[in-house]
Length: 509
Image: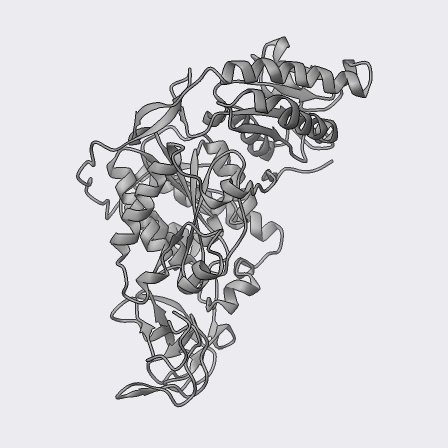
């Protein structure tokens, strides 16, 4: 995967029964290239795409990861390029037929002695940052709050060196919405949990308008009056800004008195996500993250993986890992809820892969899902969360969220992640203000191209320069460093921050 042309053909086969391989060479392989004594490329095949290892008849199974990713739409000759146009989508696993808690992994040996420097909070949680969060109860106030936050950053924040930043929790919710609809629980609990995020140090400040449906006291029934700013009660714009700065200063003074202290790695809550995936994601970056996830679980931490539509077609590999029948049934229930959600919108489940995913060699959602779940490692799934629900257990946890990077990230923050590990094959500039994001590339060519955006290169696994275990250990150690504030992920270094994006399946009135 370096820059040399005319390299020896290098391909990867994941499972012994696979009847396809993916091309590792950066330049791809040319028609006529002899790959093995009995295998010659019949056409040019790009990097990360599949080559047929056998002659396929129309309807034959195409196998990768030891699983059927689809069926041949036409006869395909051995040595040919298999792209998405030649693959027929198989049926999704039938939820009612899935085995539950039948192959629960045995507990792994504890990993003791690992610590990080975190911020302990009054409620017992531990943050990786020390930030002031300002929550909005309705989108109407966002414009004013953003102006105030800019002033806070320029005029106040330099006086509080122990505070990492100020985050406005902006969103398109709070009014013109059906807050009593059954599914409104999702955006409401997401907002509530975002405001109480561990990286905000227990400080709560809410800016509302005054006439919205989701008034601050409905969002936080026990909120103190001094923690609410209602813009309709202020005497004009300047008074609004002055009031927000006044309350922000009070919070900054308290936060500035905090300091990091040694905390066991068991206090970490780590989110796992992928975006801009390619065919290497499931063999390099995601398995390496899965190895790091196992190390974190062994250290007693909470590890969250998500993205329903990128799990649904591989869920038959997950339900047997549920620690008990209750957790397994919850996993199936979340899949069923999302099936109905997509059906109501007349959306095909294969709508998930992006053009970039397909250009990166992923034929369909099945192949993408099988690579995606590699992030979960090999431990038992101890709990399942609905979107925006707060984590309460240690171990590997599935949080049901949409696969959209921004919506998934927002939901994971609401669940309480204090750091996220994000894998990518095509590349993405995604970042979060509320928690550090470690970027792991599936290809070395991406890591070389984006030296100041990618934190870990997992592409070296494909070329044999490193093992999955090597890169997994590297990710684990980097998590502890960044959680301690000893090092910054590139996204934090540059201040890359995507807007929060609530998942709201409830009606908009």
